[in-house]
Image (cartoon, rainbow over all chains, first blue to last red; front, side, top):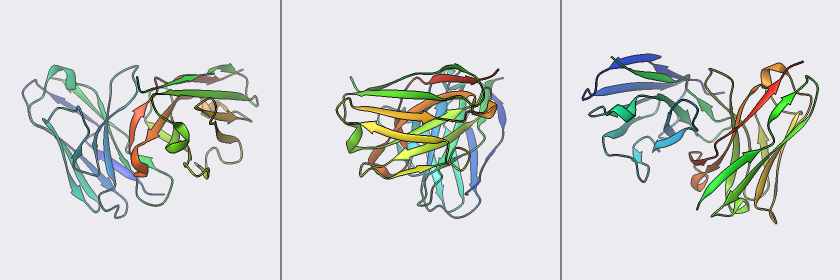
Length: 108
Length: 118
């Protein structure tokens, strides 16, 4: 199985900050990398798919980049509603799909 | 409105069985790849199973041989039959739509909690 490793596991930041979360795959996954946001008690929400494509309705302050094994999610200017847990997920050709362990973004 | 609604969760003893349902509205389940994803309390996300539009099914090793994914086209509903349940199956179970078959989940249900305990 392809292992996904996110860093950091937790992050404290302030409203208005620029934040970057990293995701590393255990083997090349081309651009088959997706990012989700999850708030407590809620289902995950798709933010970015195919490494850098913004899902419809998601604010443009969210962006993704990378290919191969290294990927990043960037939030350009943190808003109060962005404090949540973020997960990367690989959807390369071979099942199972796997998720990173999550990055909890907290208010400083 | 396009949505997914899961039902069927609850408290079940180890070794028992449970069937989860995921009713879809606003789109056709059989025309899409559909997955189940679970989340143990306080833990991360784990993909469980997928059914392709053509009907092929696949499972995570952790549930293979115990869980069965299926769908009822007439009811536009996805199912997950869970047998021989274990304590480690305790989780919120989400159904999710795989948009375009690229493996990214663009639509999720609210989830249903399954607790396996004596």
